[in-house]
Image 1 (cartoon, helix red, strand yellow):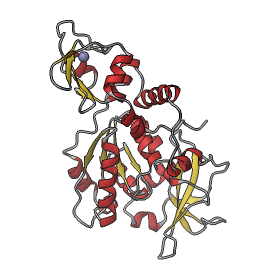
Image 2: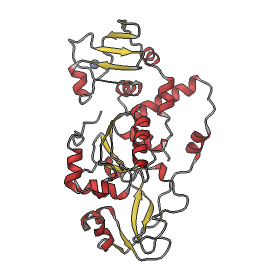
Image 3: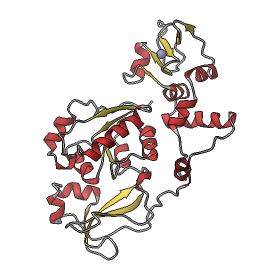
Length: 329
Ligand SMILES: [Zn+2]
């Protein structure tokens, strides 16, 4: 069953901390024009000594709890937005919290007209799992090595030269899965200057998924490293960073932003340092920072992750504490 579409941005714009607090009957005292303070209502709050650790800003539409018990239970996070609050109150994921708010919104309001963009996203069919797999893929093909991939990495990702029949013949194929790990497409990379550089099945919607998300999810890491392409993903994996997924382009779609927000608390953007990649980084940072923590890796101008050696990748990521898996909420 396709996952229900969640419009984080729109929900956030409509639901105030004030509404959420009154829904849970949380009473606080006013300490400023739009600032309130009082006893922390979160179920994870285990300290009995802190009676005044919880504060809310209606201006910023945000909350925080300064109690060590809450901060520890939230892996170092002190505050959050309406989604975080509902997720903690309901002991559910951010996505479930957003759905919860979305449903209570639609119950209490007449549905608003959806824009054309939202409509097309909501009604566009999902990528169906394939009913076949390709055989006789050559993981040792010189092209694979020429891109700096070990045979082991090529085997791990199922990448290799395909000499069979069909539209992928004579290309290096890359299996693409949905977040459940079902194979939904193969992309075919030209090994010479042949156009197009990548071939994808007609009707395949790359904006509906993130390449390698199903493997990144297995890491249990709440941070995702987001790159543009397949080969960026392979290189980061080889360098030991397995919590990586790719846009398969430079544009972050609303659906991809939704996927990231569903499964992660933080995203590290490591897009190409060319003009398109830089524009994409700033657009993605804007879109994602209202939902989760965003960090940006500064690459040398003109470079992209797939051109870097493992040591260089590790150096760039050294300042980002992203390899510590956080416990389930
Ligand atoms: Zn607390």
